[in-house]
Length: 140
Length: 140
Image (cartoon, rainbow over all chains, first blue to last red; front, side):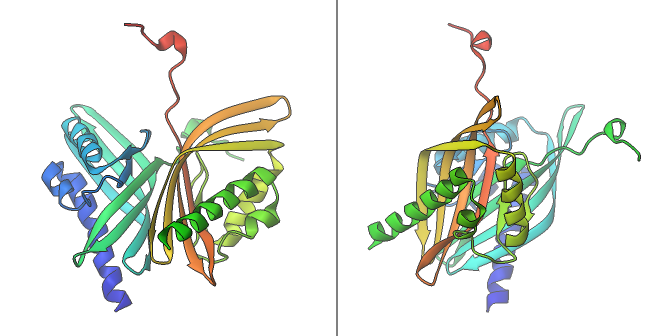
């Protein structure tokens, strides 16, 4: 049973990143709990509270992105009753016209089980310190 | 009963910041769950996993700090069974010799109740975007 639940949570986490890559606000809306107390922190942004504000932030991001791909590493998961905590590192590729950005972020995603489904209630993502460019690395 | 539990969690959150301000590693150690899966992300650092590594990171911070004061704003709390999620904004003043830094961070703290006590299991703190200096603010 714990393995089955873990699988459900990992699928919910995957649905979040599928929605992000889809740039489809309805898909993103279908996995968030629509409550006034959910929270979202995009890398480099201030905190956003409440589904309506969170939805607007995703719309703004989707309108300013042509393509985004996220590869996850270091995914770990803890479940406590109807609550689940997923930590992961996002390796992000982001394109707008000729501009292509790469970034790495540490993310805390929290999920709540309600009506037999897992809903995201917190997405807190923060950029990891950049790796030094080669020119700054001293070869001993 | 929910109010009593909320009070317990807020006290646990306060104990965490009291330990941070104390610069006392034993005090910090007394509120973390000593498990291999606890996690800590200091602002601008990569993620640290497991109590032993987390302890070492606090020791390094305490050794390089003469005084730190944290004022919390925007504290919000959700409890689900034996699990609690606290979000807050940390207004941080940090002193080392003649150097004084001010910073603002958004923080996700997660707590687990075990043996009738609340233990911190995640501290994920990320700097908020700096406020523009006056010279950059346009008066309309």
